[in-house]
Length: 468
Image (cartoon, rainbow, N blue to C red; front, side, top):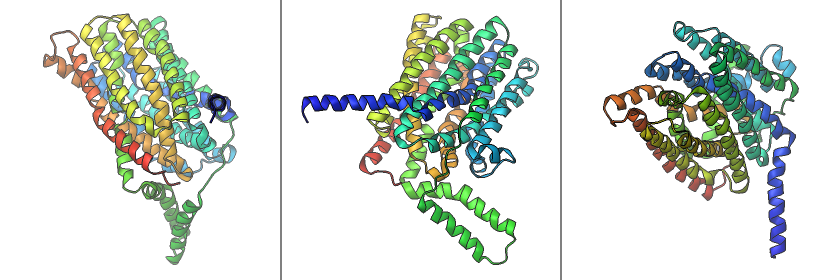
């Protein structure tokens, strides 16, 4: 190829890369990503800042973070979201949008309920409403992830993931993160959560406007599900309800998992282990971030400005970079780099703890690198997980993947406050923030197993093309 032809080809490649971000379906996920991102911090790190300001202990904050385990068990009810129609709503909106609308209603009402609670005297009541928000949010994720995969083809998955992350980041960092902190600083925490409840209308209205994707079922999938129907018919005079129940249970619960293991064989175990460990270091340290900033002496306004507003810019830059890299290089080849960067970025916070003073310059450096890496890795991982699903079981399979992705981190994060207190009590360091210092080093070490598995996964995908 001549130099001129090569330059023209490069221009077309980059033009095609950027053009994917203007596709109508891709743009839609700016708003759906907003709806998905809104509730997460409000039952996670923003909630931990609220509780810490009201004098709740670090150990209690860590235990309350186990609310997030709800996201890790969403695969349990994902077959219901995948297959069971909702009265009236499904006929009106379709199977994906009906569940999304129901979940968005639960998010809005749950946040409103949280706004009427005082963590000092009504912690249990606050946790109950937070559980409603988390359960509704996890249900929304099940339906929305299926919608995203079904409505776009493989060439748009990287751009869709990046746009989804952009909307997610706007909601999580600018609204539920910085916005909530600003409102808490200048008004009150209850006011902030009532405004957040109103923001849930963005997803509600978007769901009403968008169209339902077509249901796609591969020939092999239809054949497998047809066999159980034939088998149920051969069992003789079974009651109709029992025969239909057997067919439903097999198609909704058994087939999605059998399909995954048939397509990836023994390597399916490696994939599931890698998915579970990919974000371990990131999730494990997340719940202690805001309490750390508060204990260091940063004001809520400083936390909002740097970790949320500025952090959002860096995270979105990382998400866009990740979408470009996925389009040009492919997600599997980027997994090991992503894990390595996520784990080592935690050491920057150990550096801040070692300094022991609320240094805004160091905090800015930490947030710059950490958020850029997190945004890039998120886009890469979403595109990778999407490529593993079968279109007939997108809700169930993707819910399984994301449940496994968050479960180890959520389980470990529940003890994060206790670990900080233990490091400090054991005099890990003579400095005031030695407990945090040791904790951040510990979370970085948690990334080693995922890095090893990422190399194995990459080699597998380089050797063979995943079966369709």
